[in-house]
Image 1 (spheres, rainbow, N blue to C red):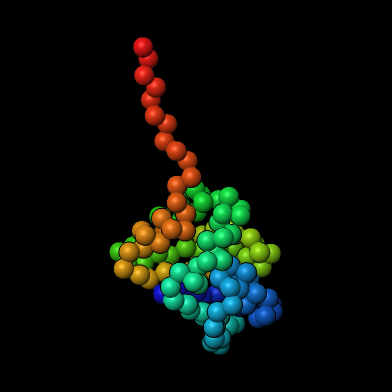
Image 2 (image 1 turned 60 degrees about the horizontal axis):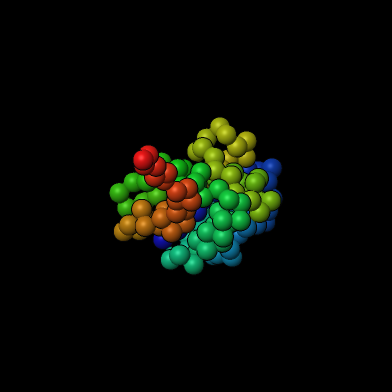
Length: 138
């Protein structure tokens, strides 16, 4: 399951925040909860279908190796957590961010829960660089 949460600040347009999420994950069902500080957009999808757009963006932008590093840093037993820059997502691109302080409007929080998150990482961001084989001198 892919679980996405995004803070919608009082100064932000909810539809633009939804579009940022859809630019990365496609059209997925979402709900909005009111909070003291604003609203929280929550979206969920199941299976790799909800990750296909992200999969394609990582290839288009040629950032699989960087993504792989970020994804492995968020790896837990049966989950994978990472953060995306909301403004960059709205523009249709990918930029990984930190949980706090890096993006003034707050990040898109993504958590993928599954039995084998390493398998998801290998699918989303396989290694692109080949290991150099030492040459033999004669």
